[in-house]
Image (tube, rainbow, N blue to C red):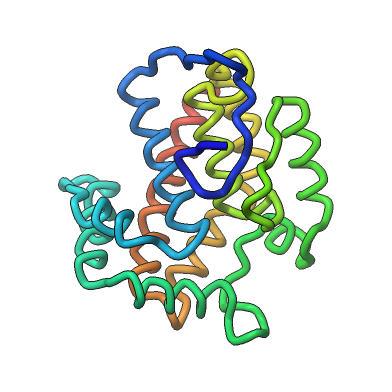
Length: 215
């Protein structure tokens, strides 16, 4: 399949599927989800680092986080990003400093009930995983790619309404992703990925507030 992110969930829109146009706010939200998904799915390529270096910020909290990430990307090459990613998420054959899975954060174990619950909702929403990435679906990059797909309408007939987005966010992201980003930002091996985590943390705060208002 072809996807904007390498975490490889299948987009089951069918032949000729053309997602409905999005408003500016939803385009921005979708962009943050897919950017974070791509950065956390695998070590970033030089092409992706070039894109991140070109990001521009402003005086808002998220703009400041974007500017910080762009600055860190300018100080990072592909090999150092690979080495940092490996230490953070793979370690030296014993697991990395941070485990990016909902099951781990919610139960202390891998491949546990949160993964089963997510798979049930994936089936209901028409989301099938691809074959290229062997990580469990409750990996942070998978879940963020799914949220991106719900916003832009990659799965099924089109974008899901805000109530269904809120339900998915509150069930599969809000209970644990902030803790993950805080741990990643504080990790000993994190330099570039501390900037990724900072952006993720600020973005999630904005999403939580927006969903709270919508409710």
